[in-house]
Length: 72
Image (cartoon, rainbow, N blue to C red):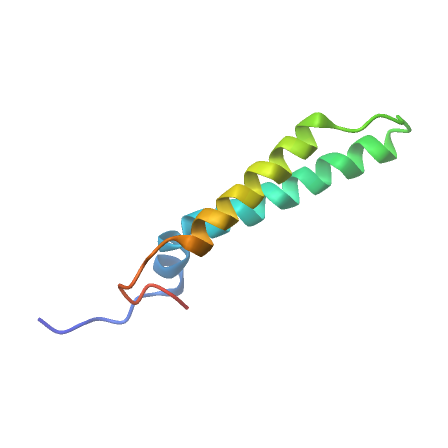
């Protein structure tokens, strides 16, 4: 059976922890920005939570052992 070339979308889906981590970090940063623009002087715990979970997902993605040519 011949190996077929995987599409970009298949590669992104295979790397879901990294993609999800980036999205969570971006959403947490957006949450901080919204709180800052609202004039409140408090930190957003939700924003910090999203950023921390995003960093954890990126760490999981970085240390995952995947040797099945799904990497970019």
